[in-house]
Image (tube, rainbow, N blue to C red; front, top):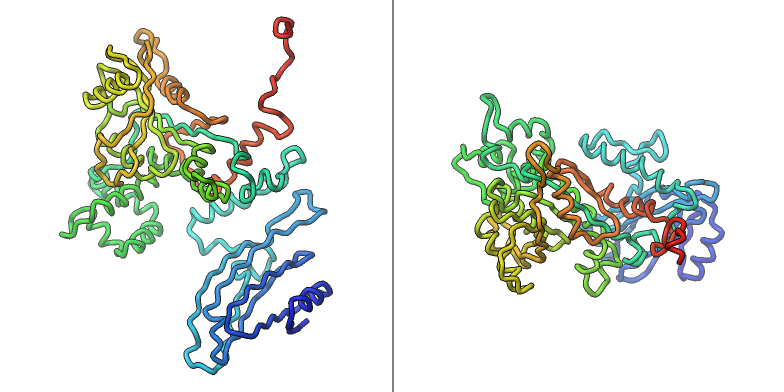
Length: 463
């Protein structure tokens, strides 16, 4: 079908009688840009879109467009499936010579193979991209194919149009003792007689290192030599930190876990209900918070290198809901932290005697500059909970577990309805983080009321 419509009424009337496949042509006179929204019922794929301009008509150049769609099928038990999700935003310059016609054709589903409809070619992507895309799309079946009691309800469970209060609140806790937070410059420069540690990590991820260097306008060799200080050219402190973070994200570090956990906050922060609220930061904190339970922060038994790395991460994500919990022991904590804790208790609770043991909640002060050297004074204490006993109690050989005590210290400050304990060498990415709200619903089905008491009451409870 090839038709030119002059009015909106004629367009709607003719589209109701269209038999697919068809060729649809839209025409608009004048120099102003026109937006056309077309809903195909029943759903059908769009093979290509073309724009034809000319006669000094600047209305259609440059051309920018996007196509997206979700196919619903009543016979499909899953309730629907993604047919296409394509975003294209390509500005085209006006024709070189005016008064000549220009026709631009866009392939809508260029990433699909010609042999099998609906398939995606992943061979051209990096292995890590192949792995993430494959797992993400395959695991969507469990969400879209849920039974009635776990089915996704429009306006309630769908994230883009639901109220922020429908998202279960989550507290993520990362307990750690003295694990490496961010790989140090000294460690990356050290060598085993053959290669440096950085060179070994690069050998495992050569393509990703090349992309990293391209983003910073360096060649692969020049970036490596500049970091090693062997070329006479020194990297800036910020770029040096970027190299350390790049290597840390490909090793078993605490920073890798923190960045992975932050992906869920990135998802929540993008939701319209959060962005449109009066206080987006407060709305984000009502949905999720991340607590880094660093047991040895500020301790004489810890590492100052790790403490600096923790403060860097706090500064990097200071616009997110990110907190630090550490153990306070007056005999083991550094003097600067000890003075801050004692002054906090004295000013807030009017308690003049020294506190010996405590669990401390802190975060970085607002508007702290993110740099490699964030001073200790930028740390702001939010709450101090004194304890009668140290983190480890008992006699040698029969001591309590340090990680359990560290987790308990973090749980005292947790506000979420749900808790997630994360190991200090885990990783996560954005695609999996977007599924977290749907997974949380499995723990609180919608037919239950959170205020109801579960179980049968005893006679004493009845009276």
